Length: 186
Image (tube, rainbow, N blue to C red; front, side, top):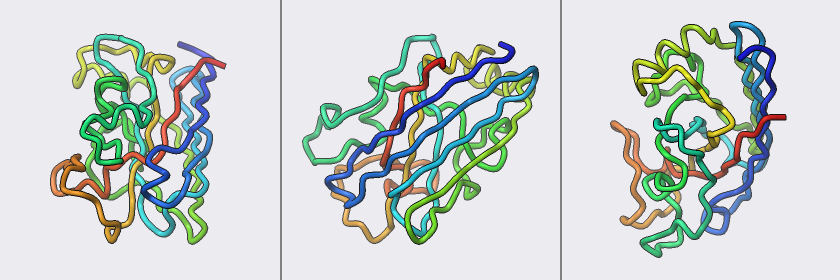
């Protein structure tokens, strides 16, 4: 997988309930043993940390973005578990150390007062592939079969008890998807 370029247009999810339409762009550039990840977001909930990951299916099935049709319990929110049938599981985090694949932590971007953040990271593919294989029994990142999610709403936002998504000691405020994009070969 040398010298490949992937992009994703990131569109809002749950915007009617969270009061902002988070949107942005992502690019993934593979050159030799380096993966350069660049993500820029606007109109995210301001002043808070936003988890961001690519999701997919370990069996190589093509992932699709979740829409409000995935709100199977009818509470008006598409929560993390409701994304799984179309998007698969959380795979690689876009935090301070993506190759470590340590998903629940506090090392993700924080939006400024206007809800903007930009994230860029160079990742050694050999390390990422080794950890990906250990987690999913596959070394193929298959970016064109993945989707990117941006998560996170303020802890003061009133979420109904039906909104699920606890990961470790992090509650649904941290994991609620606010934007999603399909990763495509460019």
